[in-house]
Length: 229
Image (cartoon, rainbow, N blue to C red):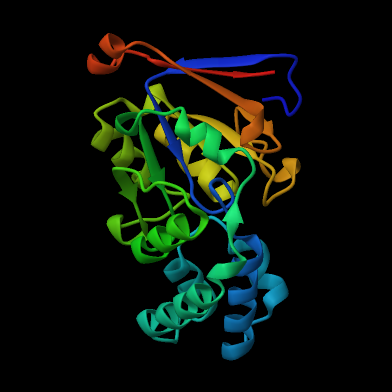
């Protein structure tokens, strides 16, 4: 792993991305909502916020307030996040990255709910992928690899032929455990917290994506080439 390589390249079949911190700049919204929730239920925000990114809300709620009704608390949290939607924006460079990927070779794996993910993509003007693995679609959330394995299977490719773009330690761990190659963005966490990734870059503008011909795509052979300079 290197955070500033002279050059780095990868060739494979599909691109899998997280949503928050990779496609959508939602850090402020997420932290505002979690701070509100923590204060509402008597949890120290300073203890919760550093570990709230990249994992399912239900898992964080159970971790910090196991005595509460997780469904009720999640609904309250989502309501606050939806109210703050106007503060969302796209992560710089993500539009160009996604535009270069054939829809049959791109999937989103998010720890957020499908409702929240869909609303955020719409808010920032990004397309909804044909394959979206959300919090409710898996039995175990990140850092468990289930979501990334499910996304690769839905695209009809091996996880080892997928490049994952993540921004949180839990997501990097999940993608690595699935056997994917992982590029981590420092949009949410410092490089020192992302050392398990194969490569660390600032944002999607550092990733140059080239797509192979239709024959390769049709036969599920490696067709995506990513270069980082």
